[in-house]
Length: 218
Image 1 (cartoon, rainbow, N blue to C red):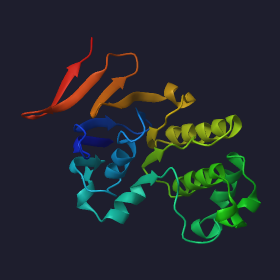
Image 2: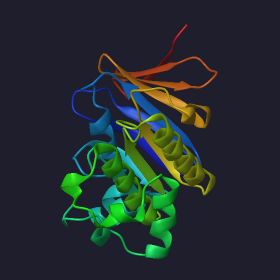
Image 3: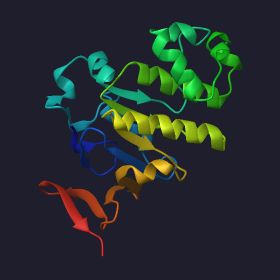
Image 4: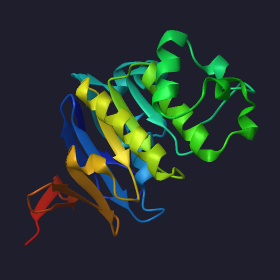
């Protein structure tokens, strides 16, 4: 289980939620509202007060690189340290079926990264994360810049990862078929987190004198 408790990101209200294996949470909000900062805090890439636990272990109880092997953040623009994609991957027997599943050709692995489209880089970044077999995937706009077919392929891969028991926290500014798989939506609005379990009233979170205060919307 991934448990986020009173996580304080910048000037935003504290965020709290819990996800079991195979569950998905969609994070939404206006551009600049703090969606990326939330994912980066969960991944322990940026400092933030509060508690983030995975299967009983708190993020500060292990070195950052070890935590990020388990809790993998996939940026909206993945970073690369070699001129072509292939050196960033390990087991080719796992890699090539994933490349094909996302509608890419084997040749893309040996093309200069500077010549790849945004959609190609995004899909390769997702494949790189999946190949590491993390417990949690933190996906920042994984559908951005994709045509309809590529979007459906990415949604299918994320769905397959959920079936394998991965926990997924997904930032998206556009409708996605994954909403049907999601346990809830975490909406950032006016600096406040609103946790909206699908089919139930929203729960607004703000800071009170004793920490988190939940108010159910009418």
